[in-house]
Amino acid sequence: MSLSFTNSIATQSRARALVPLCVGAGAYLFFLYIGDTLLQDSDSFWQIKIGQWILDHGALPYSDFYSFTRLGQPWISTSWLSQVLYALSFAQWGWAGPVILTTLAIALSAAIFVYLLDAHLEIPRSVLFAMLALFLSLHHLLARPHILALPVMVAWVGLLMMTADRKSSPSWLWLPLMSLWANLHGGFVLGLALIGPMALEAVWTVDAKKRVPLFLRWFAFGVAALLAACVTPYGWRTLLGATNILNLGELLSVISEWMPANFATFSAFEGALLGLIAIGFYRGLVLSPPRILLILLFTWMALTHVRSIEAFAFLVPLVLAKPLGGLSPLAEPDGQGETWPARYVTALGALMIVAAAWTSTAIYMNHHRFTFTMTQTPVAAVDLLQQRKAQRIFNAYQFGGYLISRDIPVFVDGRAELYGETFVMDFFKAVEAKKLDNLTRLLEEHRIDATLLVADAPAAQVLDHIKGWKRIYADDIAVIHVRDDAQAVPATAR
Image (cartoon, rainbow, N blue to C red; front, top):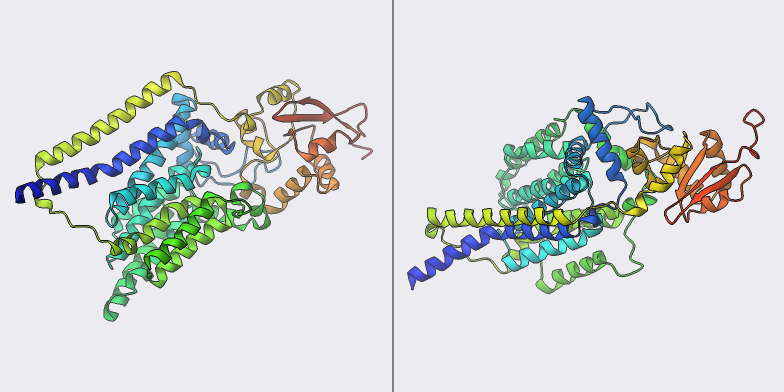
Protein backbone atom coordinates (compact mmCIF):
# COMPACT_ATOMS: atom_id res chain seq x y z
CA MET A 1 0.00 0.00 0.00
CA SER A 2 2.88 2.34 0.80
CA LEU A 3 4.41 1.74 -2.65
CA SER A 4 1.04 2.32 -4.33
CA PHE A 5 0.55 5.57 -2.42
CA THR A 6 4.04 6.77 -3.40
CA ASN A 7 3.38 5.99 -7.08
CA SER A 8 0.08 7.87 -6.87
CA ILE A 9 1.82 10.93 -5.44
CA ALA A 10 4.47 10.80 -8.17
CA THR A 11 1.79 10.49 -10.86
CA GLN A 12 -0.11 13.47 -9.44
CA SER A 13 3.11 15.47 -9.33
CA ARG A 14 3.79 14.79 -13.02
CA ALA A 15 0.19 15.65 -13.88
CA ARG A 16 0.41 18.96 -12.03
CA ALA A 17 3.64 19.79 -13.88
CA LEU A 18 1.86 19.44 -17.24
CA VAL A 19 -1.28 21.34 -16.28
CA PRO A 20 0.07 24.87 -17.05
CA LEU A 21 1.32 23.68 -20.43
CA CYS A 22 -2.02 21.99 -21.20
CA VAL A 23 -3.90 25.19 -20.27
CA GLY A 24 -1.55 27.25 -22.42
CA ALA A 25 -1.97 24.87 -25.36
CA GLY A 26 -5.75 24.96 -24.99
CA ALA A 27 -5.76 28.75 -24.91
CA TYR A 28 -3.45 28.84 -27.93
CA LEU A 29 -5.68 26.59 -30.05
CA PHE A 30 -8.84 28.43 -29.03
CA PHE A 31 -7.54 31.89 -29.87
CA LEU A 32 -5.93 30.62 -33.05
CA TYR A 33 -9.35 29.35 -34.13
CA ILE A 34 -10.95 32.76 -33.44
CA GLY A 35 -7.83 34.59 -34.61
CA ASP A 36 -9.76 37.04 -36.79
CA THR A 37 -11.20 38.61 -33.61
CA LEU A 38 -7.66 39.71 -32.71
CA LEU A 39 -7.60 41.92 -35.82
CA GLN A 40 -10.17 44.54 -34.90
CA ASP A 41 -8.14 47.62 -34.00
CA SER A 42 -6.57 49.81 -36.69
CA ASP A 43 -3.73 50.67 -34.28
CA SER A 44 -2.25 47.33 -35.36
CA PHE A 45 -1.53 48.89 -38.76
CA TRP A 46 0.64 51.72 -37.51
CA GLN A 47 2.30 49.48 -34.93
CA ILE A 48 3.47 47.21 -37.74
CA LYS A 49 4.38 50.17 -39.94
CA ILE A 50 6.63 51.65 -37.26
CA GLY A 51 8.23 48.25 -36.71
CA GLN A 52 8.97 48.04 -40.45
CA TRP A 53 10.47 51.54 -40.36
CA ILE A 54 12.74 50.57 -37.45
CA LEU A 55 13.93 47.48 -39.32
CA ASP A 56 14.47 49.38 -42.57
CA HIS A 57 16.41 52.26 -41.01
CA GLY A 58 18.12 50.49 -38.14
CA ALA A 59 17.04 53.34 -35.85
CA LEU A 60 14.16 54.38 -33.64
CA PRO A 61 11.76 57.29 -34.23
CA TYR A 62 12.21 60.48 -32.25
CA SER A 63 9.67 62.59 -34.13
CA ASP A 64 6.45 62.14 -36.06
CA PHE A 65 6.55 61.51 -39.80
CA TYR A 66 3.12 59.93 -40.38
CA SER A 67 0.80 62.91 -39.94
CA PHE A 68 0.60 66.32 -41.59
CA THR A 69 -0.78 67.98 -38.46
CA ARG A 70 2.15 67.03 -36.18
CA LEU A 71 4.91 66.45 -38.72
CA GLY A 72 8.32 66.76 -37.08
CA GLN A 73 6.95 67.04 -33.53
CA PRO A 74 8.83 65.06 -30.82
CA TRP A 75 7.49 61.54 -30.36
CA ILE A 76 9.03 58.26 -29.22
CA SER A 77 7.73 54.73 -29.45
CA THR A 78 7.64 53.05 -26.03
CA SER A 79 6.58 49.74 -27.67
CA TRP A 80 9.38 49.53 -30.23
CA LEU A 81 10.30 45.89 -29.51
CA SER A 82 6.71 44.69 -29.87
CA GLN A 83 6.40 46.67 -33.10
CA VAL A 84 9.53 45.04 -34.50
CA LEU A 85 8.26 41.56 -33.57
CA TYR A 86 4.90 42.26 -35.20
CA ALA A 87 6.60 43.65 -38.32
CA LEU A 88 8.84 40.59 -38.64
CA SER A 89 5.92 38.17 -38.24
CA PHE A 90 3.77 40.16 -40.69
CA ALA A 91 6.53 40.21 -43.31
CA GLN A 92 6.94 36.45 -42.98
CA TRP A 93 3.33 35.21 -42.83
CA GLY A 94 1.00 38.14 -43.52
CA TRP A 95 -1.76 38.62 -40.95
CA ALA A 96 -1.26 35.05 -39.76
CA GLY A 97 2.06 36.19 -38.24
CA PRO A 98 0.64 38.80 -35.81
CA VAL A 99 -2.25 36.47 -34.96
CA ILE A 100 0.08 33.59 -34.05
CA LEU A 101 2.41 35.91 -32.14
CA THR A 102 -0.50 37.36 -30.16
CA THR A 103 -1.96 33.91 -29.53
CA LEU A 104 1.39 32.64 -28.24
CA ALA A 105 1.54 35.57 -25.80
CA ILE A 106 -1.99 34.82 -24.56
CA ALA A 107 -1.14 31.13 -24.15
CA LEU A 108 2.07 31.92 -22.28
CA SER A 109 0.19 34.29 -19.98
CA ALA A 110 -2.36 31.59 -19.16
CA ALA A 111 0.36 28.98 -18.54
CA ILE A 112 2.37 31.26 -16.23
CA PHE A 113 -0.83 32.27 -14.44
CA VAL A 114 -1.82 28.66 -13.71
CA TYR A 115 1.74 27.79 -12.68
CA LEU A 116 1.77 30.61 -10.12
CA LEU A 117 -1.69 29.74 -8.75
CA ASP A 118 -0.73 26.07 -8.53
CA ALA A 119 1.41 26.77 -5.46
CA HIS A 120 -1.72 27.52 -3.38
CA LEU A 121 -4.82 26.25 -5.19
CA GLU A 122 -6.11 22.93 -6.48
CA ILE A 123 -5.82 22.27 -10.21
CA PRO A 124 -9.55 22.76 -10.99
CA ARG A 125 -9.66 26.15 -9.29
CA SER A 126 -6.43 27.30 -10.96
CA VAL A 127 -7.78 26.34 -14.39
CA LEU A 128 -11.13 27.98 -13.62
CA PHE A 129 -9.44 31.24 -12.67
CA ALA A 130 -7.44 31.13 -15.93
CA MET A 131 -10.59 30.62 -17.99
CA LEU A 132 -12.34 33.48 -16.19
CA ALA A 133 -9.34 35.78 -16.68
CA LEU A 134 -9.28 35.10 -20.42
CA PHE A 135 -13.03 35.53 -20.69
CA LEU A 136 -12.99 38.85 -18.85
CA SER A 137 -10.14 40.14 -21.04
CA LEU A 138 -11.67 38.91 -24.29
CA HIS A 139 -12.66 42.32 -25.71
CA HIS A 140 -9.14 43.72 -25.14
CA LEU A 141 -7.19 40.74 -26.50
CA LEU A 142 -5.95 42.30 -29.75
CA ALA A 143 -2.87 42.09 -31.96
CA ARG A 144 -1.20 44.99 -30.20
CA PRO A 145 1.88 45.45 -27.96
CA HIS A 146 0.02 45.27 -24.64
CA ILE A 147 -0.67 41.58 -25.27
CA LEU A 148 2.98 40.76 -25.93
CA ALA A 149 3.72 42.38 -22.55
CA LEU A 150 0.92 40.46 -20.78
CA PRO A 151 2.99 37.33 -19.87
CA VAL A 152 5.75 39.59 -18.52
CA MET A 153 3.21 41.44 -16.36
CA VAL A 154 1.78 38.19 -14.98
CA ALA A 155 5.25 36.77 -14.28
CA TRP A 156 6.54 39.98 -12.66
CA VAL A 157 3.57 40.47 -10.33
CA GLY A 158 3.34 36.76 -9.57
CA LEU A 159 7.01 36.56 -8.55
CA LEU A 160 6.72 39.69 -6.39
CA MET A 161 3.57 38.34 -4.73
CA MET A 162 5.25 34.98 -4.12
CA THR A 163 8.20 36.74 -2.51
CA ALA A 164 5.91 38.86 -0.34
CA ASP A 165 4.07 35.71 0.75
CA ARG A 166 7.38 34.22 1.89
CA LYS A 167 8.32 37.41 3.76
CA SER A 168 11.58 37.67 1.84
CA SER A 169 13.11 40.12 -0.63
CA PRO A 170 12.96 39.86 -4.45
CA SER A 171 15.81 38.37 -6.42
CA TRP A 172 17.78 40.80 -8.55
CA LEU A 173 17.81 38.12 -11.24
CA TRP A 174 14.24 39.22 -12.04
CA LEU A 175 15.28 42.72 -13.12
CA PRO A 176 15.68 41.71 -16.80
CA LEU A 177 11.92 41.09 -16.76
CA MET A 178 11.38 44.80 -16.08
CA SER A 179 13.78 45.76 -18.88
CA LEU A 180 11.93 43.44 -21.26
CA TRP A 181 8.57 44.88 -20.20
CA ALA A 182 9.82 48.47 -20.69
CA ASN A 183 10.85 47.66 -24.26
CA LEU A 184 7.61 45.86 -25.08
CA HIS A 185 5.00 48.29 -23.77
CA GLY A 186 4.55 51.43 -21.69
CA GLY A 187 2.45 49.55 -19.13
CA PHE A 188 5.65 48.69 -17.28
CA VAL A 189 4.97 51.69 -15.00
CA LEU A 190 2.33 49.51 -13.29
CA GLY A 191 5.03 46.98 -12.42
CA LEU A 192 7.10 49.73 -10.84
CA ALA A 193 4.12 51.11 -8.91
CA LEU A 194 3.30 47.68 -7.43
CA ILE A 195 6.69 47.25 -5.76
CA GLY A 196 5.62 49.52 -2.89
CA PRO A 197 2.41 47.66 -1.91
CA MET A 198 4.20 44.31 -2.30
CA ALA A 199 6.96 45.52 0.03
CA LEU A 200 4.35 46.51 2.62
CA GLU A 201 2.80 43.05 2.39
CA ALA A 202 6.22 41.45 2.91
CA VAL A 203 7.04 43.44 6.07
CA TRP A 204 3.50 43.55 7.50
CA THR A 205 3.71 40.51 9.77
CA VAL A 206 7.44 39.97 10.22
CA ASP A 207 9.20 40.58 13.51
CA ALA A 208 9.75 44.24 14.32
CA LYS A 209 13.55 43.94 14.23
CA LYS A 210 13.41 42.36 10.75
CA ARG A 211 11.12 44.97 9.20
CA VAL A 212 13.63 47.72 8.51
CA PRO A 213 16.30 45.47 6.88
CA LEU A 214 13.63 43.73 4.78
CA PHE A 215 12.07 47.02 3.73
CA LEU A 216 15.47 48.41 2.78
CA ARG A 217 16.12 45.39 0.55
CA TRP A 218 12.75 45.95 -1.15
CA PHE A 219 13.58 49.65 -1.51
CA ALA A 220 16.92 48.84 -3.12
CA PHE A 221 15.16 46.44 -5.47
CA GLY A 222 12.65 49.17 -6.38
CA VAL A 223 15.46 51.58 -7.27
CA ALA A 224 17.16 48.86 -9.32
CA ALA A 225 13.87 48.12 -11.10
CA LEU A 226 13.50 51.81 -11.94
CA LEU A 227 16.99 51.78 -13.46
CA ALA A 228 16.22 48.52 -15.27
CA ALA A 229 13.16 50.18 -16.85
CA CYS A 230 15.54 52.72 -18.41
CA VAL A 231 17.55 49.99 -20.16
CA THR A 232 15.95 50.82 -23.52
CA PRO A 233 17.22 52.67 -26.60
CA TYR A 234 15.44 55.77 -25.29
CA GLY A 235 16.91 55.57 -21.77
CA TRP A 236 15.14 57.64 -19.11
CA ARG A 237 12.84 59.15 -21.76
CA THR A 238 10.99 55.83 -21.78
CA LEU A 239 9.51 56.76 -18.39
CA LEU A 240 8.29 60.12 -19.68
CA GLY A 241 6.85 58.61 -22.85
CA ALA A 242 4.98 55.91 -20.91
CA THR A 243 3.33 58.42 -18.59
CA ASN A 244 2.33 60.97 -21.25
CA ILE A 245 -0.84 59.06 -22.06
CA LEU A 246 -2.02 59.56 -18.46
CA ASN A 247 -1.95 63.35 -18.87
CA LEU A 248 -4.67 63.54 -21.53
CA GLY A 249 -7.43 64.57 -19.11
CA GLU A 250 -10.90 64.69 -20.65
CA LEU A 251 -9.70 62.85 -23.74
CA LEU A 252 -9.40 59.60 -21.78
CA SER A 253 -13.19 59.59 -21.37
CA VAL A 254 -13.70 59.78 -25.16
CA ILE A 255 -11.33 57.12 -26.51
CA SER A 256 -13.21 53.83 -26.23
CA GLU A 257 -10.56 51.74 -24.46
CA TRP A 258 -9.85 54.51 -21.96
CA MET A 259 -13.51 55.00 -21.05
CA PRO A 260 -14.80 54.01 -17.61
CA ALA A 261 -16.72 50.78 -17.16
CA ASN A 262 -20.41 51.00 -17.99
CA PHE A 263 -22.85 48.99 -15.89
CA ALA A 264 -25.99 50.12 -17.76
CA THR A 265 -26.31 46.51 -18.91
CA PHE A 266 -25.01 43.42 -17.15
CA SER A 267 -21.43 42.62 -18.17
CA ALA A 268 -18.83 39.97 -17.39
CA PHE A 269 -16.88 42.51 -15.36
CA GLU A 270 -19.94 43.30 -13.26
CA GLY A 271 -20.44 39.58 -12.68
CA ALA A 272 -16.79 39.21 -11.66
CA LEU A 273 -17.09 42.05 -9.14
CA LEU A 274 -20.22 40.55 -7.61
CA GLY A 275 -18.57 37.13 -7.55
CA LEU A 276 -15.52 38.58 -5.81
CA ILE A 277 -17.72 40.09 -3.12
CA ALA A 278 -19.65 36.82 -2.75
CA ILE A 279 -16.45 34.78 -2.34
CA GLY A 280 -15.23 37.16 0.33
CA PHE A 281 -18.44 36.83 2.34
CA TYR A 282 -18.91 33.10 1.78
CA ARG A 283 -15.36 32.01 2.57
CA GLY A 284 -14.85 34.57 5.31
CA LEU A 285 -11.63 35.91 3.84
CA VAL A 286 -9.46 37.99 6.15
CA LEU A 287 -6.89 40.01 4.20
CA SER A 288 -4.01 42.17 5.28
CA PRO A 289 -4.30 45.91 4.56
CA PRO A 290 -1.67 45.75 1.74
CA ARG A 291 -3.64 42.99 -0.02
CA ILE A 292 -6.83 44.99 0.36
CA LEU A 293 -5.01 47.98 -1.11
CA LEU A 294 -3.87 45.92 -4.11
CA ILE A 295 -7.37 44.56 -4.80
CA LEU A 296 -8.87 48.04 -4.52
CA LEU A 297 -6.18 49.38 -6.87
CA PHE A 298 -6.85 46.77 -9.57
CA THR A 299 -10.61 47.23 -9.20
CA TRP A 300 -10.30 51.02 -9.44
CA MET A 301 -8.15 50.68 -12.58
CA ALA A 302 -10.73 48.44 -14.27
CA LEU A 303 -13.59 50.75 -13.25
CA THR A 304 -11.76 53.83 -14.51
CA HIS A 305 -10.49 52.47 -17.85
CA VAL A 306 -11.90 49.42 -19.61
CA ARG A 307 -8.45 48.68 -21.04
CA SER A 308 -7.26 47.77 -17.52
CA ILE A 309 -9.56 44.76 -17.37
CA GLU A 310 -6.73 42.26 -17.96
CA ALA A 311 -4.82 43.65 -14.95
CA PHE A 312 -7.92 43.05 -12.81
CA ALA A 313 -8.57 39.61 -14.32
CA PHE A 314 -5.05 38.23 -13.95
CA LEU A 315 -3.64 40.05 -10.92
CA VAL A 316 -6.51 39.91 -8.41
CA PRO A 317 -6.41 36.06 -8.31
CA LEU A 318 -2.64 36.20 -7.72
CA VAL A 319 -3.23 38.44 -4.70
CA LEU A 320 -6.01 36.17 -3.37
CA ALA A 321 -4.29 32.83 -4.09
CA LYS A 322 -2.59 32.36 -0.73
CA PRO A 323 -5.58 33.49 1.43
CA LEU A 324 -7.90 31.23 -0.58
CA GLY A 325 -5.44 28.35 -0.44
CA GLY A 326 -5.10 28.77 3.31
CA LEU A 327 -8.77 27.87 3.73
CA SER A 328 -8.17 24.45 2.17
CA PRO A 329 -4.40 23.82 2.10
CA LEU A 330 -2.96 21.45 -0.47
CA ALA A 331 -1.37 18.17 0.54
CA GLU A 332 2.39 18.34 0.20
CA PRO A 333 3.54 15.62 -2.23
CA ASP A 334 6.68 13.68 -1.43
CA GLY A 335 9.22 14.62 -4.09
CA GLN A 336 11.33 11.48 -3.36
CA GLY A 337 9.12 9.43 -5.68
CA GLU A 338 10.17 11.55 -8.65
CA THR A 339 12.93 9.74 -10.58
CA TRP A 340 14.80 10.58 -13.76
CA PRO A 341 12.58 8.23 -15.87
CA ALA A 342 9.53 9.98 -14.44
CA ARG A 343 10.95 13.37 -15.37
CA TYR A 344 11.72 12.03 -18.83
CA VAL A 345 8.08 11.02 -19.25
CA THR A 346 6.99 14.52 -18.13
CA ALA A 347 9.34 16.18 -20.61
CA LEU A 348 8.16 13.86 -23.37
CA GLY A 349 4.55 14.73 -22.60
CA ALA A 350 5.39 18.43 -22.80
CA LEU A 351 7.07 17.96 -26.19
CA MET A 352 4.06 16.06 -27.49
CA ILE A 353 1.73 18.89 -26.43
CA VAL A 354 3.91 21.48 -28.17
CA ALA A 355 4.20 19.32 -31.30
CA ALA A 356 0.42 18.81 -31.42
CA ALA A 357 -0.18 22.57 -31.11
CA TRP A 358 2.33 23.34 -33.88
CA THR A 359 0.87 20.66 -36.18
CA SER A 360 -2.61 22.03 -35.60
CA THR A 361 -1.33 25.51 -36.50
CA ALA A 362 0.16 24.31 -39.79
CA ILE A 363 -3.02 22.43 -40.75
CA TYR A 364 -5.27 25.36 -39.86
CA MET A 365 -3.16 27.91 -41.73
CA ASN A 366 -3.31 25.78 -44.88
CA HIS A 367 -7.04 26.35 -45.28
CA HIS A 368 -7.72 29.57 -43.37
CA ARG A 369 -6.69 33.10 -44.32
CA PHE A 370 -6.72 35.65 -41.52
CA THR A 371 -8.23 38.99 -42.50
CA PHE A 372 -8.57 42.35 -40.76
CA THR A 373 -12.07 43.52 -39.89
CA MET A 374 -13.66 45.46 -42.76
CA THR A 375 -14.95 48.31 -40.58
CA GLN A 376 -11.36 49.47 -39.97
CA THR A 377 -10.17 49.14 -43.56
CA PRO A 378 -11.92 51.48 -46.05
CA VAL A 379 -10.06 49.98 -49.01
CA ALA A 380 -12.27 51.24 -51.86
CA ALA A 381 -12.55 54.74 -50.39
CA VAL A 382 -8.79 55.08 -49.96
CA ASP A 383 -8.21 53.78 -53.48
CA LEU A 384 -10.41 56.60 -54.78
CA LEU A 385 -8.60 59.20 -52.68
CA GLN A 386 -5.25 58.04 -54.07
CA GLN A 387 -6.61 58.25 -57.60
CA ARG A 388 -7.66 61.83 -56.94
CA LYS A 389 -4.24 62.54 -55.38
CA ALA A 390 -5.75 63.93 -52.17
CA GLN A 391 -2.99 65.40 -50.03
CA ARG A 392 -4.61 66.60 -46.79
CA ILE A 393 -7.33 64.23 -45.64
CA PHE A 394 -9.54 64.88 -42.61
CA ASN A 395 -9.87 61.24 -41.52
CA ALA A 396 -11.92 59.41 -38.92
CA TYR A 397 -9.97 58.42 -35.82
CA GLN A 398 -10.31 54.69 -36.51
CA PHE A 399 -9.07 55.05 -40.10
CA GLY A 400 -5.74 56.60 -39.10
CA GLY A 401 -3.87 53.32 -38.76
CA TYR A 402 -5.02 52.03 -42.14
CA LEU A 403 -4.06 55.29 -43.88
CA ILE A 404 -0.58 55.06 -42.34
CA SER A 405 -0.27 51.52 -43.70
CA ARG A 406 -1.03 52.97 -47.17
CA ASP A 407 1.67 55.65 -46.76
CA ILE A 408 -0.90 58.46 -46.65
CA PRO A 409 -0.28 61.32 -44.19
CA VAL A 410 -3.05 61.43 -41.59
CA PHE A 411 -4.91 64.17 -39.77
CA VAL A 412 -5.08 62.06 -36.60
CA ASP A 413 -4.49 58.46 -35.52
CA GLY A 414 -4.31 56.36 -32.35
CA ARG A 415 -1.20 58.10 -30.98
CA ALA A 416 -3.26 60.44 -28.81
CA GLU A 417 -0.25 61.42 -26.69
CA LEU A 418 1.34 62.93 -29.82
CA TYR A 419 -1.65 65.14 -30.70
CA GLY A 420 -2.57 66.19 -27.18
CA GLU A 421 -5.86 66.62 -25.33
CA THR A 422 -6.91 69.95 -26.86
CA PHE A 423 -6.35 68.93 -30.47
CA VAL A 424 -8.07 65.52 -30.26
CA MET A 425 -11.01 66.83 -28.23
CA ASP A 426 -11.43 69.57 -30.84
CA PHE A 427 -11.39 66.88 -33.51
CA PHE A 428 -13.99 64.67 -31.78
CA LYS A 429 -16.34 67.62 -31.25
CA ALA A 430 -16.02 68.45 -34.95
CA VAL A 431 -16.76 64.87 -36.04
CA GLU A 432 -19.75 64.68 -33.73
CA ALA A 433 -20.89 68.06 -35.11
CA LYS A 434 -21.49 69.32 -31.59
CA LYS A 435 -20.05 72.63 -32.71
CA LEU A 436 -20.35 73.45 -36.40
CA ASP A 437 -17.69 76.10 -36.05
CA ASN A 438 -15.20 73.42 -34.95
CA LEU A 439 -15.68 71.44 -38.15
CA THR A 440 -15.44 74.34 -40.58
CA ARG A 441 -12.55 75.90 -38.68
CA LEU A 442 -10.48 72.70 -38.72
CA LEU A 443 -11.16 72.17 -42.43
CA GLU A 444 -9.97 75.65 -43.26
CA GLU A 445 -7.17 75.92 -40.72
CA HIS A 446 -5.50 72.72 -41.96
CA ARG A 447 -6.32 73.32 -45.66
CA ILE A 448 -8.22 70.03 -45.95
CA ASP A 449 -8.97 68.97 -49.53
CA ALA A 450 -10.89 65.73 -48.73
CA THR A 451 -12.61 64.07 -45.79
CA LEU A 452 -12.76 60.36 -45.00
CA LEU A 453 -15.34 59.73 -42.29
CA VAL A 454 -17.35 56.82 -40.93
CA ALA A 455 -20.55 56.37 -42.91
CA ASP A 456 -22.85 57.36 -40.04
CA ALA A 457 -20.68 60.16 -38.62
CA PRO A 458 -22.70 63.35 -37.91
CA ALA A 459 -20.01 65.44 -39.63
CA ALA A 460 -20.54 63.47 -42.84
CA GLN A 461 -24.21 64.40 -42.82
CA VAL A 462 -23.41 68.05 -42.07
CA LEU A 463 -20.92 68.26 -44.95
CA ASP A 464 -23.73 67.34 -47.35
CA HIS A 465 -25.21 70.76 -46.60
CA ILE A 466 -22.11 72.94 -46.33
CA LYS A 467 -21.48 75.11 -49.35
CA GLY A 468 -18.18 74.31 -51.03
CA TRP A 469 -18.19 70.58 -50.25
CA LYS A 470 -19.68 67.65 -52.15
CA ARG A 471 -20.01 63.93 -51.48
CA ILE A 472 -18.30 61.79 -54.11
CA TYR A 473 -18.30 58.35 -52.51
CA ALA A 474 -20.13 56.37 -49.82
CA ASP A 475 -20.43 52.75 -48.78
CA ASP A 476 -21.20 50.89 -45.55
CA ILE A 477 -17.75 51.71 -44.15
CA ALA A 478 -16.79 55.23 -45.19
CA VAL A 479 -17.94 58.38 -46.95
CA ILE A 480 -15.80 60.88 -48.86
CA HIS A 481 -16.35 64.60 -49.34
CA VAL A 482 -14.13 66.85 -51.44
CA ARG A 483 -14.09 70.57 -52.09
CA ASP A 484 -16.50 71.70 -54.78
CA ASP A 485 -14.27 74.05 -56.77
CA ALA A 486 -17.24 75.59 -58.52
CA GLN A 487 -18.72 76.79 -55.22
CA ALA A 488 -15.71 77.08 -52.92
CA VAL A 489 -14.66 80.54 -51.84
CA PRO A 490 -11.11 81.40 -52.94
CA ALA A 491 -8.55 81.25 -50.13
CA THR A 492 -7.57 84.90 -50.69
CA ALA A 493 -11.17 86.01 -50.18
CA ARG A 494 -11.38 83.99 -46.97
